[in-house]
Amino acid sequence: MELGDDLLHFVRWSDVIGKIFPKSKVYKIPFFDSRNIEVKIPWRRCPIGQHWVSQHDRQKKNLEDVDPHCRRNPSAKDLLKGEEIDLIATLDIFKNPKVQVSSHKLGFKFGTKYDDLISGWTAYWNDIFKIDPALHPNAVKALMATESSFIATGSAKNKDPKIGLARGLIQITEETYRILKDNKGEIKDHYVELEDHELWEPNKNICASVRWLFRKRDKAEGRLERKPTWEEVLIEYKGRTRSKTEKTQKIKNDIKKYLKDMEEN
Image 1 (cartoon, helix red, strand yellow):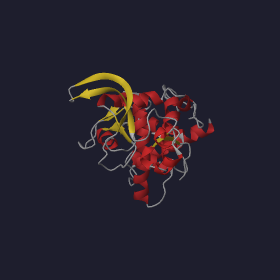
Image 2 (tube, one colour):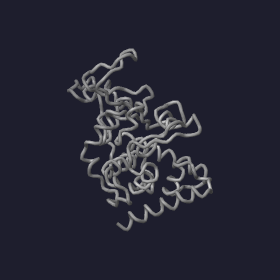
Image 3 (cartoon, one colour):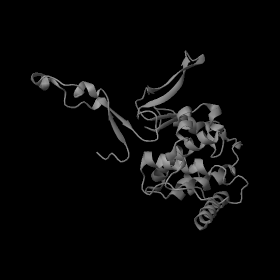
Image 4 (cartoon, helix red, strand yellow):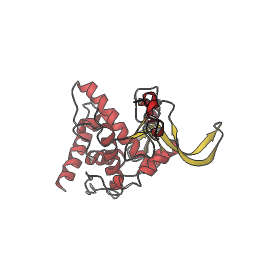
C-alpha cells in the first residue's frame, strides 16, 4: 500500500498495547483490526470519511450551534462541506503550494485577484487524485478567464433546464453541483456539498470547480478513447470536445493564448 503523504492514525490504541497485560493474557490481544484505522491527510481537520461540523440542522428546520467536531459521512466516503473548505484555505500548506499560478493578469482588471485560491485548490485536488501529469494552476486560471473574466458575480442561463444557471468564477451549473454532492450519482468519491448561496463565494466556487475538472478529465478520456491533455480537459469542461463551430475554435484559441502568455511571464 502506497501511503504518500497520508498519515495513518490508530484509534483505540489502548485496547491493543496501551497498557501492561499479564503474560498469560497476551494471547487474547487482537493483533490487527482495519476498522481501527483512520486515514488523515495534512489538509483536513477530519479523517477521510468524516466531515467538520459546528452546526446541526435540527429536523431540517433550523441550525443550532454545537461544539465543532468531526462527524461520520453516511456514505463513508470523502466529503467536503463549506465550513471545512474555508478552514483549508487558512492553512500554510494551502497558502504556500509548491506550484504557483502565473501572476499574469491576462488583460483583465481582476486577473490576479484569485491567484492564491487557484494555486491552493489546484494543489489540494492534485494531492487527492495524484494524476500524472498533475493539473497546473495556469490551466485553472485560463479556464476562469474564459468562464467569467474573473468576475465573481458572473452568471449565465442555459437553454437546457436540467443544466440550469451557471454562476461564479468558474461557472458552476446547478446540474454540476447536484452531481458533486450526490453519493448515489455518477461520481463515486470525493464529494463537495455546498448550499446554493455558497456557489457565489470565490473560495468555494474554485474548490468545487477544480474538483469538477478531475471528473471532466474522466469524461474526456471516455470521449477521446485515450488519456486527454489538461488543455483538452478544459474544452470538455466547456462541453465542446466534439464541437467544431467557430465559437469553439475561438475558445480554444483563447485558452492557448492565455496558457502561452502565462508560460512566458
